[in-house]
Image (cartoon, rainbow over all chains, first blue to last red; front, side, top):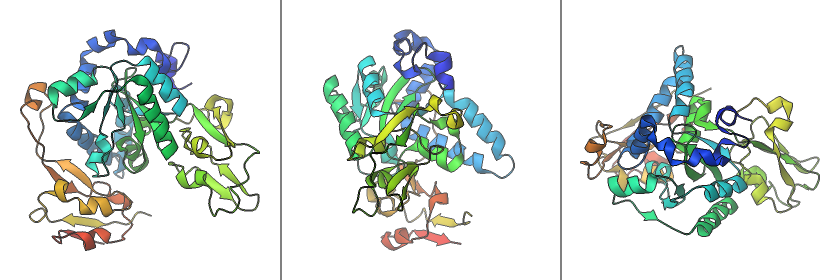
Length: 273
Length: 84
């Protein structure tokens, strides 16, 4: 159980708790300010500002102080946690006002435009008010869930982002090369900008190393470089210290040889988030 | 060890990076970043007055650079210089 589930989860995880989706949480002024900034005209500036401040965490002596401040601040801002495909679909069942937007992080690095940003809550109204030129798609909920499954089959991982914990606002279908939250974590060591998920993958005995291939698909597609290939035993190995529990390897495995197990069941990595 | 690089972009040459975007597309590691120009006011009234955002190119994630020099070759304006 992560720290957010302990304080906001009730009996389940914080993003599966229906209380966290209620509209009474919008009365919080700080949360409304964040929602204004992350929607409409502010989003480009918001991403720009967070990545610029992250750079301070790499300074030689005072960097540690900035890293602590950033870790302390990010639960009150807009960052997220990795979830599996099944959990992402469950989150969409709880959410209302679902709309699909073009991915913002991909725009800032000029990648291919892709409408995979699944927003819910007040974001749709705010976008219609603040940024009418933006393309907003509204689809029935089962089609949106189908989109999540399609992204999973392409090898993208999902994350649920909060606007001030515990209010979830968006499900991203991401790739490490574009995602601003992942860049903050991997370049500047700010752990709370992208928290690890509640699962880790483990390779079962079914794995035969995808015979005849030079490198198995799970090793190739793992976004966090946690999988390696043992050529002698002909099977894939997970480095569970690096695993985020996104479930990309499980979704892509042709032999169904990878299982997702809860993080709490392994004492060595229980405290790594 | 991280190489100490200097990636310079001649801003007088590179004026509309969001429309061109060749360096952003070709970079295999994603060093470049489109930075929105100018200062920004966080009040919602101010946000409604902005019609379009103009961007400028910045090597924000230069720790990722692997010195393949493809951006220098592809730039039609010769605006990118990489120094050690």
